[in-house]
Image 1 (cartoon, rainbow, N blue to C red):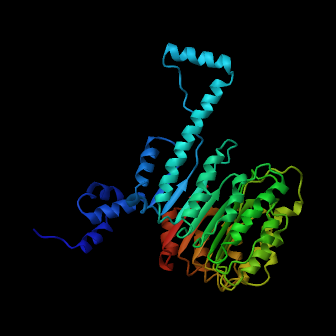
Image 2: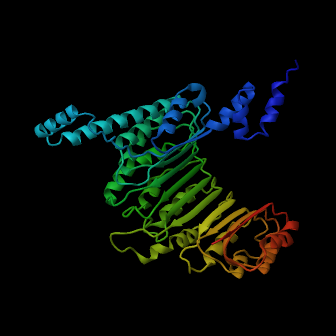
Length: 439
């Protein structure tokens, strides 16, 4: 019988889907190993059900857990099992206990809840401990008022201590009361960190106190951190990040910074603190993004000038970043002049290759006029929102961006056949991908 070399099977694996590997994984050890890698490389755990219990049982096995590279956890709210009396005797006993202790039913339900919570925590902890090669971890709270602090205490810091020597990417959205515990962590391999600010209606003083330990944690990443993202939503009523950016240190390897805030700018009362943070990383920064979400609710009116926070940041950058190759800018306020953005793009025209402009629909002449003559030749990727897609617009794009490789357009209306327009205008220009989204 002829036996094929394992190298041939490994070549075959590259052409098989996960489902195909699943059906033939018993045929050869190479197929089995490839199926395990495909099946368990990325895991998402978000609810308590039989399938999750079965999955966690598998993940407790070292030969399964070692294949997990990415883990996304959404802690759930454990509900106590409702248990009705099974017999007349049991019913009588419960009624007698209620006479002795009116809170007997509530206490019993709480005991059942704590028992279920302890079981879930034990299953998750056992599975996490077995993941000896995990690289990416995300823990995501839904910002509900009801949550289990025990869950987050067990599933935030202890697993991170276990993975400290091999974790490279971390995304955290947890209740504010949990974040101070990160201060004791030392993640020696972490390269990318994303944090969602969820402070609700907590007073600013308490927010600063809670974030003191968080700043210690972030500053301890100075030797390895390459990408830092701070994201906030409208639910954080009293949040102000100005103090945090003044207390953050310098990260020699930092290449990408993302800041996303409600567009009103109230959560960054002093944009110059963020400018100072960017300036400290001028020599290493290759990409930065200023994004927005819907307006936040504030207890009292703020400075009307805060809505221009993005404009003020761009205007304050008066010296180019020598390595900057990608930018993402939310065009806020919607009716603000584009002169500040034009100056910024012109300043970095020799290095920028990727540009994303969001939130505001631009007219054809506004897009074209963003770049002075010959300043757009280096653009390889462009994402822009336009009012209307027309053949004339595509023709102008083809001339304005001769080296464009990827184009993503968001438009309110289309007045031409999109596929034909793309073939006519961009086929000879080398565009390898394009996306048109109708709004």
